[in-house]
Image (cartoon, rainbow, N blue to C red; front, top):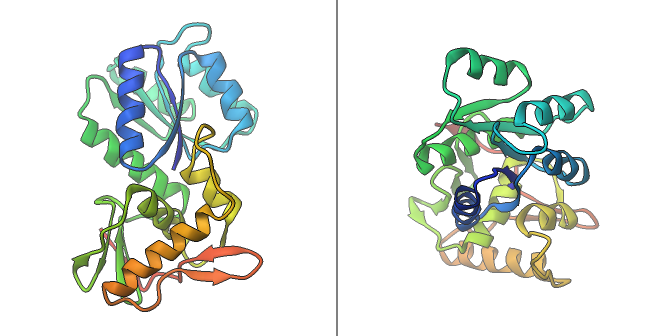
Length: 228
């Protein structure tokens, strides 16, 4: 997913960026609410992780401004404000979830994944396809119960297709979701990733995985089933 982290603590912001990037997400980061509004208006994010106590413009004001302008980007508030009325205010202002600091990074990841699934109409984390299964929470692909050895970037591409399974995803959309603006993207980068994934899947015993939609992009078939 493409995520915007809005946090004024340099240490926490960098830690969040590093952790989310390591598991395959594409992450931008800013330190105040005004920058958050600017970034969110110019980039199509899957999720914004938003602190409330921010300089220039506080988080709630930024959230309300985005919602008033029609933004439907999912927002996860990350704040030390832990009273019930504060959590209620955040959710009523348009947030999709609220996590109180301090927090365990593993819990943050679970909430990020849950919000991401909801954004694509997926309620559960494991999707079964003909010959293989994608576990979005564990971030792995298995064939007959055996894990396929994918790189983080390869899984990010599979995740991108799995979240929109049954619908083709263009190369441009895939690039936008799995590469950040600072990463050079070669003209055949997506095709090369797809080729590598298909080869690894085939070697694991799955002859057909990612489908090519000529002139459109790539697609995973409609899941056979979903499970928690």
